[in-house]
Length: 256
Image 1: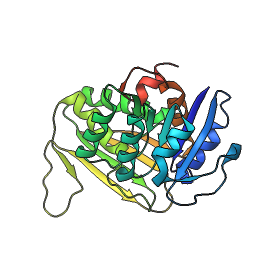
Image 2 (image 1 turned 120 degrees about the horizontal axis):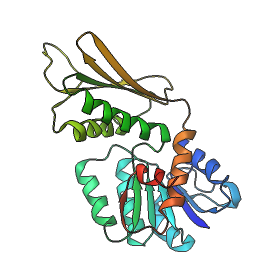
Image 3 (image 1 turned 180 degrees about the vertical axis):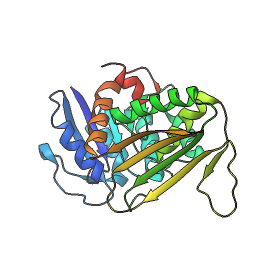
């Protein structure tokens, strides 16, 4: 039985993760926290606690894994608190700075296991592999990344788009990255990245490889956040008790 706690339990992702976790017989929700809605009752009779009480709640409930889908500033503190208590982690929050990544890595290394990824969907992880293979085969093609999300998303470009840039750089070596274009900007050998925000778009990511006389587009479209939630639940079941370190969703999927 994997005991889980969820921060951001009343948010869009938190709610879906609760629903997906309830489908897994070998998983038990033992705590839910949020910055709003303390006192609400979750499935199984778990009462939502104020996120400011995280450390005391984790000490009381003793989860195996903390799942975090909040905002970057809060997530870093949540990760450090959980790691200090020996609790493994699943982190889907995005928008971290380099300094925040370093803080989390320092807290995790040698202490707990953590799956940290900007996207938990199976399709996106295949998308990254296809993009890397295409980049390696089409070295001289111009590369553009276009991502689109709903109008409430705070960070841009998306964490998935940034991970896509990394996949391409891994295949090709270091390249300049240009975020959007304006004015006179002759194209060089850079990777172009463009962010669209509007309506209730769950998440679209397209990589365009443009060559002489042809172009190739590789696209992933998320129709529902359920794809992310089910992946996060799978990651939580997988990471519990693993050797300390930071893992990617690709590590989880290898266990299929």
